[in-house]
Amino acid sequence: MGVTISFGRFEQLTADFAGYLQNVLRLNKGDRVAVMLPNILQSPVAILGALRAGMTVVNVSPLYTASELEFQLADSGAETIVVLENFMHTLLQALPRTPVRNVIVTQVGDLFPHPRKELVNFAVRRLGRKVPAWDLPSARRFEQALEEGALHPPTSAAPQGPDLAFIQYTGGTTGRPKGAMLTHANMVANVLQTVAWIGSRLTEGDETVVTALPLDHLFALTANLLTFLKLGGNNLLIIDPRDMASLISQLRRHRFTAITGVNTLFRAMLDAPGFDAVCSANRGRLKLAVAGGMAMQRDVAERWQAATGVPIVEGYGLTEAAPIVSANPVDTPGFSGTLGWPLPLTEVAILDDAQRAVAPGIVGEICVRGPQVMSGYWHAPEESTGVFTADGWLRTGDLGRMDEHGELSFVDRRKDIIVVSGLKAYPAEIEEVVRRHPGVTEVGAVGVPDPKSGEAVALFVVKRDPNLDAEALRRHCCEYLAAYMRPRYIEFRDALPMSPVGKVLRRVLRDEARTR
Image (cartoon, rainbow, N blue to C red; front, side, top):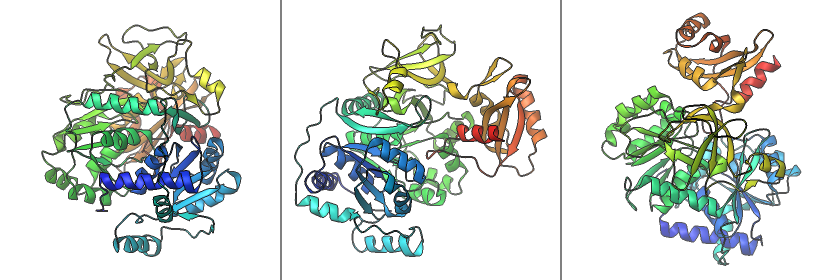
């Protein structure tokens, strides 16, 4: 929204917030502080301020339902939460069944200069009608917290490497959400590994990165916020990347040199009216575009490179590894379709079900060792033990292959494999074929019970062409897919369930289909 915080002011704001947590709320080192904010200026202030105070940050998606929020707050034991008032109605539904006793509430414009702050807050609250009514007399205002904290400077928390920095919730490799325990050493290691991977591609103190993915997601937190703090760069925060008109407007006004995203975001930008003007305005400035979080489609990557002149560099990671594990070289000439090579000090192995290394080119489970790998899951000793092999490999639950040169390729999630008459069908491969049809916008492939073959393939499709029908899609699949991988069922929908970063939630589709 055109407001910039300098590094000097950021240092002061984080000190003020740290002082408030330590000396006003009287929190102790290691206490959990939940942050439920979109990409507004208060988000990095709250995150870095809490770390500076020696607290452990619990990132919470503002898109959570009350039940999801209740579980995460109760499981983490967070007694303090920073929340945008737009989401207070969700928090109030969950609050009675959580240990939270300190609620710090903020408005979008609270760190804006006068009178813009008042105008923006009024517009959001009154004109935009984006703030459901709420009432919690004990809630403290973020501005008030900063003012009080400024009167009580923080003491050095002196965190050590093994101290917890984040409890980051993830579906993990199996079961209900679990809190990955990420230490200060994990996070520092992954930032330094990422900076080493970037090398001389970016210049310290001279870069601007577009941060459209939510900072509550570890990809954006590490790759954007922490890495570009280390580089002395500028983060352009996008509050709501789903508002494509606003995003395109922001990109037209700012000169940016780096951008991170997921496949759905890059595709949406390419399809958006006005993106050609973004490319023209920024021609020659963009140095690096990085994709992660989900598989990248070749046609999207090729369209992006044709439009911007810069290839999309794909990498691989997971929450349990802080999150970046491998990536293609930053100077890659074009999209490779692979996940590149491990970051410095990172080991990757492809293991079979007996936890033995497989030959190059053979599919197995991707396993990781390195200084960025978590210490385990919060209050889940059995799951923590089960996710590591006896010799310390983190079992990711992802299937992949590695060639004789050590280059990694992703196949699919182990739990998403569809077994048809004993043959393994990989949803990612099926979805890739279906997306090639010009009439398809988005697709999810899942396995459903079948009395003859055990499982069958079901497709859930969002149309680009309203005239597309199931038979046309079946003919397309017959041309490119083996018989056992072809869909038995096809259902068209207006939209598919998505994660906050735009990944199709196959689990939700599978549960719905199997219930029926």
